[in-house]
Image (cartoon, rainbow, N blue to C red; front, side, top):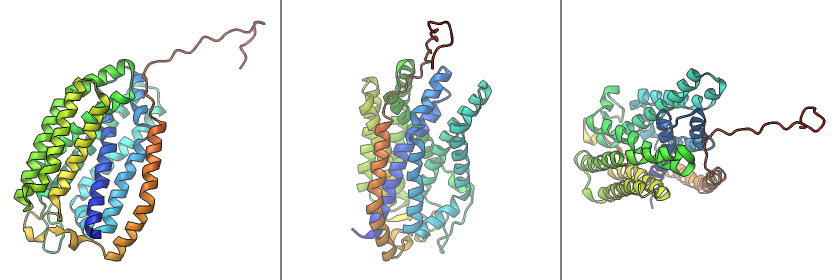
Length: 351
């Protein structure tokens, strides 16, 4: 396989991994104001993603770094076009990250509630903007003959791209609910199971409509044939419909696997519909950036490939180990401490 194509595929894999793992993080955050009933349950939901969310963010850093190194022209045009959108994502990321730490800095109900909502808003906002941003790559942006972005923030919002953003929000919420059914117990488990059932049909409906629309956009705006774009689209639709059905059968593990597959298939549909271009120009199709024109030199890609072959397996093993270590369910139930036992001499208990 040509190294340019290999790195286009690897970047698609990195984005898929990011949305697969961070997607359920965002989903848990979106459910924080609605699913738990007590402070202990809210703490349990934070605890369910606390040990892993920052590791999941590594996929975003690596995806951005790989794009910068492998396709510098793509990186430059995309970041100039999405500059304000990326700043907004950065803002949401900051308030979401801070919420994990600052929530524990105060005991007041208002303080904790404020940071809970900060996490929820940040999670929903990030999902929405990422959906809009990735959909714009295939739908088209005003790019001039020099490969520079020639538009404003308003050009990012079209019916298709906004719908893509909303789809990511609903899909991640469903993904997060299924994740919680694997990590919670007791009353909290019962409520997240109900949430997963309620989100199943909307997620399948939004996902199916988005995937069909993406195939249409790829054919209409990126001069693609229906095949092979339709393959990951059909796979994604089937996975999401099956996930919705599995929630009613109380098959939590399989339901989570299907939402994971649906998430990956959604990203795969976008990138399959995008290739061989990396950004489509809406003003003049000839100005679109393609893989050969946006890629780095062969030597750069060769060095990157060697580094990836060495480092990527280590990262995967470490992250897999961390998920294994923190696999236990969280209860969300208050623990009553035993009453201290007086010593036989009437003094203070030992210890």
